[in-house]
Length: 131
Image (cartoon, rainbow, N blue to C red):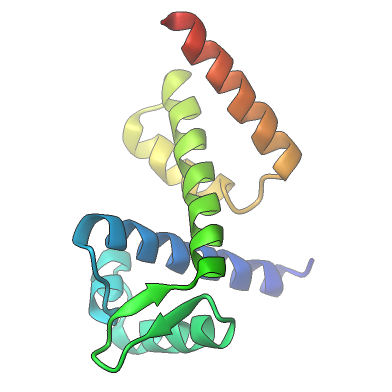
């Protein structure tokens, strides 16, 4: 995969993850919410939302509210799960929460499914043995 394509996929995943998190906390999402959360300009977010609509990851109502489609929600949930599991593992091995969250965001885009599943299973084993 080329670097440019990889960066585009990473950007899509970051937007989808942000939309999902905002939906969970606010119940509704508009472009301005995404811009504020990601610290991006409104025009940049507008371009990204157009791209996500074209890929059928989101729908946008006439009043500006953004909703994940089924495929968009599935991809967002996958990214969020990777992020949460990776952050949890990093915290478990002694990384500060702030660093773990930042590093998990970087790793979540590059990790293979095989490696992620192994990490997830290992973390589950470690945490269930502690109980």
